[in-house]
Length: 252
Image (cartoon, rainbow, N blue to C red; front, side, top):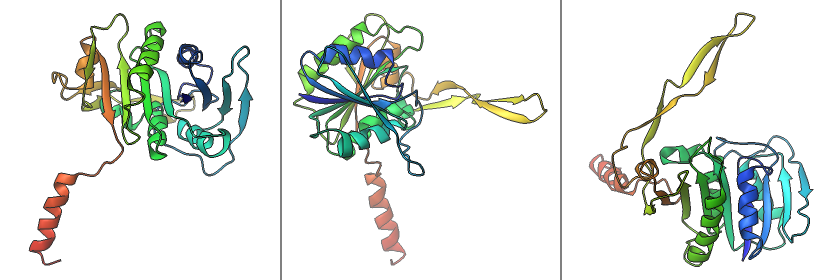
């Protein structure tokens, strides 16, 4: 297969290296990733300045790569429209350092790279190791290879697989829905040396449905790999019918 790899941790990240090593002996790889960490950029694109691209070498392999001084979404747009000779069969974003669970997928650069693949009709996968401290990606790399082998022919170009892998040995795999995650104590108010107030964003996750066994948050907390099918159609189809009835009542 021809596979496009990207991420939001930067092209030199350990997770991306593990993913490349796990796949390049069986597949034709193209890597287009940010030149530095671009976490939590969401689906931001760069429109007010030019994008700079530098080709990367991978000695002893056939892998071709470029680093981009832009966002994950920028990277996928450039890859598909300017850098790759032909469209990929599959796009994989990761392996991310830290979880992409619940409503956090709306902020995630990792997931946004995969969504950009969907927008362009490319079957896509986002993979995250759900620990910021345990950076043993060895199992994650093996899982990525197995997922590609098992699901590559079954992944819809309209739905991405968002995969979260807990540290250690997982209990198994759960197919899940997105949990509802918010944050508390988000801002730390501080004063700089000149007496000016500034705020540092942080916060702790607060999961509104943490005991729901159907969610990705529950699955990972209990030691399972979570696979959540996601699409970008945010339309509330149920409420559409209600709006139609409201308009009929007021004669519109």
